[in-house]
Amino acid sequence: MGRQDGGTGRRGATRAVMLAAGAVALAGCVGGQGRATGERAAAFPFETAHECNTAVAAALDRVGVGPDRIAKLWYDDQIGRDVDGDSRIVGYTVWARVAEGPGYLIVDLTPQCFVRQVYTRGGLELPGLPAF
View (cartoon, helix red, strand yellow):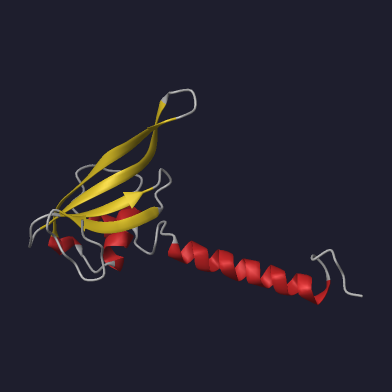
């Protein structure tokens, strides 16, 4: 009869390896800081210093939009309410004005600077990105 505890033996080791591999894959897909550095982020025309600038620069690099294509970048706080009705920041919307066309490139972030999604608005179309 096989073990039922799931944490020991060959099956348990296989599960642990699969869980670890899944966590690594998920960390690579969810966004976060990416591979941009503070120096790379400084090349983008952010209006203000922000803790998420490096994550935004990495997201823009991933979609093929370098600092030379951005005319302006700014943050809007996403405000939500907790169970007590108090306001709190639930994320950030970064608006990027792309120099060569109408509309905006949007980076949607969590309060911890993980990228939720990247998309375009207002007539801007970029390959591989949803446009609204």
